[in-house]
Every structure is written in structure tokens, then in C-alpha cells.
Image (cartoon, rainbow, N blue to C red; front, side, top):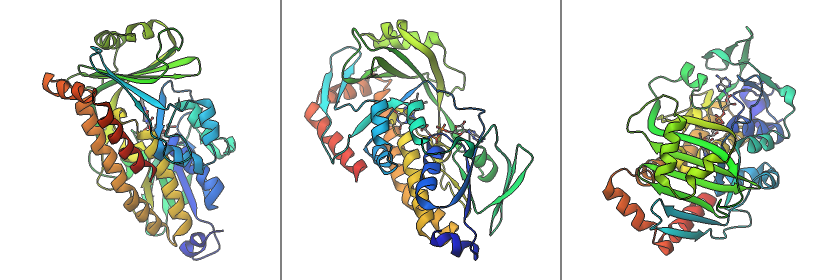
Length: 385
Ligand SMILES: Cc1cc2nc3c(=O)[nH]c(=O)nc-3n(C[C@H](O)[C@H](O)[C@H](O)COP(=O)(O)OP(=O)(O)OC[C@H]3O[C@@H](n4cnc5c(N)ncnc54)[C@H](O)[C@@H]3O)c2cc1C
């Protein structure tokens, strides 16, 4: 039993945590609580079972270090790939640079993996019966010494801490935090898998065109294609395949044929972002997208979710009270999250640039390989720190 479990409750009872949502943040938090902190926890997940959501994610050094701490890095890299170069090209082909990822530390700087494989790896050590599927909270009431929740099962339970790890449309956020924090972006995203043979690039590649970017990476014999395009309006309508075809045609090169050779389902969604001044109260903490969903152009949402889980579990294990641990969790995560939010806003403007002027600047930058390598190295060192 850790120190907090005794001090906080004033008895020998262990601290009880409810994790709402078992995606990337919730899965990682459960894994940390299971392995490290010795805190009692329950997990409720609204879905009846985990689906293999079709998109792939890339995790930079900050996310990679969390996987290492959870002892699942080897598993994840075996399921995915560890690119050592990034190719940046424009739709016109006028700019086409290949950057070497610098070697910093012992592990990989980048891992690209199917989201479902990452999720499976995080949950390897969690007995499935610990996850209460098809269940969520219908009410959350915070009191000075405890939080009472009502569940869809009709049960009422009391915890020392409730963690909202329930993604962009977080019910915990809705129940416990006021004000409008969810914003629909103008961007539509699609993700699909295709054959990685023939013309599919061997090097991980980003292709930028007017208002549009595609990201391609080969993972085994399958090629992942993520596409983002600005639609000009903040719309919540599901993006169509016709819009995707138009975006791929604007990008040209091999993009249109990747869709023709698609394997499996097409993932399509509009981008939503969450920004909040403070995403904790004394006994309620949000983690991952529930707290701060960032534009996927930054390629950072999953890494932030993993970092949140590690930070919260560490503070819970080391501080004497739940409110103190939650406060420290927020204070230590606030700046790194804001830095990513600022980067994401900048990247959205430049990578998905609409105006000719911004596109000219972007395309010019993409030819300056040594400068880009220096910028990339500096950012990777920051992320690895
Ligand atoms: C196309 C695309 C590409 C992306 N690429 C990258 C990338 O390259 N790199 C990167 O780092 N990130 C990327 N992201 C973002 C990343 O996937 C998310 O930031 C990450 O999944 C957030 O994890 P999470 O656990 O907070 O939320 P989620 O993974 O969404 O998990 C939330 C969980 O909560 C459950 N849930 C929802 N509501 C409730 C409820 N009311 N009660 C109980 N459970 C509930 C859900 O079923 C789910 O299991 C991408 C996203 C998209 C859409």
C-alpha cells in the first residue's frame, strides 16, 4: 500500500479510482495503476467491445518513452514500424526533401502503428474482466472527501477520484466542467490502408497541396494513408468519399491510386478540438482527448494521452492526498499540452495552407532540408527531455 492510500482516507483503506473510458489514455492509466501505484481502480467503457478503429498513429519520442516505462515498447515496435527518415514533398513535386531523424538516446524517435495494435499492447497486462464494457456514468457528484457516480447499470458507487479518459465527447467533462470546450475544426480527415508494394513510398512521406495534406507510411505489407483537408466551413457533417477523391486528385502523384487499392474500411471524420483553462478539480481529472484533443496534423494526441496517464499515476503514487496529486498532475501537464496546441495551430495554418502566399512560404521551407533537420532535431530533443 502506498503512502497516499493511508493518509488520504485516514484509514488503512486503499485509494479507489474510477477510470471512465478505456482507449489510449484510459488503457495506459489502467496499466500504470495495475503495475506501479498499487491503487485500487475500476474501469468502465461505453463500448460493448473494442473495435479495430481503422486509423494508424505515429508516436514521437515523448509517447515512445511512456511505452518504454510500461514495458510495451518492444511489443509496439514489433507490431508497427520505426521510421528513420521523413520525406516532405509538395503536390507539384517542386519541393521534395528527405530528412534523417537524429539519433537521440537509445530508443526510436518515432513509432508508427495501427491504433488498435497500440491499444492491444497497452492492455496486455489488464485482465479483461477488470473492464466493465457497455457501461458509463450518468451522474457524477463531487464532495469534499469523495466522488459519487451513478452508472448506466443503475449502481451508485463512491470513489476517491474519477478520471475522465472518455475521449473527445467526454461525458465526465460534460457532467463536471462548465462552458463550451469542444470546437469543430474546418478539417475533414480520412484514413485507410492500402497495399504497400509497387509505387507506395518506402520512406514515411508527407505530401502537401492546397488546403490538403496526406501522410503515408508502410507498416509491414500494408500502407497507411491519412488525409486531411480544409473544407472552408466548420461543419460536423461526415466527410464523403467524393471529397476524399477530390483531395487525392489535388495532391496527385501516387495518391489517387492508393484509394483504388484500399484494403478494409475507410475511416472518415471531422476534426474536433478541445481546449480548457483547467481540466481538473479536486477529485476529478480529465486525461487525453477529453482534456485537450489536438488537431491530428500535429500527430500528438495519442502521445499526450500516454504522457497524461503516466503523470497522473506517478503523482497519485507519490503525494499524500488525491487533491494534491491531481493539482500537480495538472500543473506539470499544462505547459507541454499548451506547447503542442500552439504547434498544432501553426501546423494547421502552414501544412494545410490555403492562400497562395502561405503556400509559397511553406513550399520554400520544404526545400531547405538542413534548416528543417535542425528544427526537427531541436523539437525531438525537447520531446525526449
Ligand atoms: C485520423 C487520425 C489520425 C491521428 N493520428 C495521430 C498520430 O499520428 N499521432 C498521435 O499521437 N495521435 C493521433 N491521433 C489522435 C489520437 O488518436 C487521439 O488523440 C487518442 O486516441 C486519444 O486517446 P484517448 O484515450 O484520450 O481517447 P480515445 O482513444 O478516443 O478513447 C476514448 C475511449 O473512451 C470510450 N468512451 C467514450 N465515451 C465514453 C463514455 N461516456 N463512457 C465510457 N467510455 C467512453 C471510447 O469508447 C474509447 O474507448 C489521430 C486521430 C485521428 C482521428
